[in-house]
Amino acid sequence: MDRKNEVIQTHPLVGWDISTVDSYDAMMIRLHYLTTPDQAPADANVGRTLWLTTDVARQLIYILEAGIAKIESTDFQPHDLLKH
Image (cartoon, rainbow, N blue to C red; front, side, top):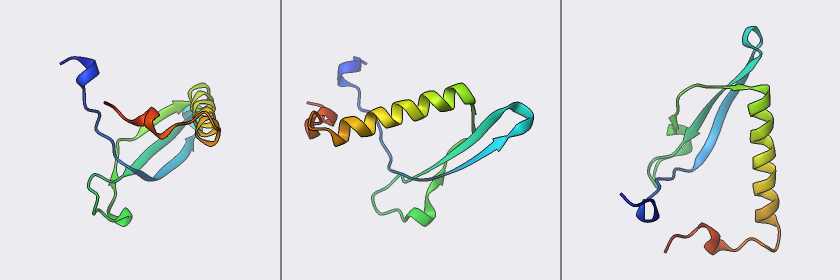
């Protein structure tokens, strides 16, 4: 399939579990997400448990902050997220 025509499945994120694992110098994260429009947040699906090193966690924070800044700036256009 041509990547240009690829449909990306998206699911609203409604929560997470995050904890530190001192013996591995890492963090553990599980994301909670909805798979249907009528699904209640209390019935959210829980994803796989993921490990993040401190370096990866810092990169994630940086990328999230940059995304928030773009959305909050005047440069963001809703059609940036739409596919034609």
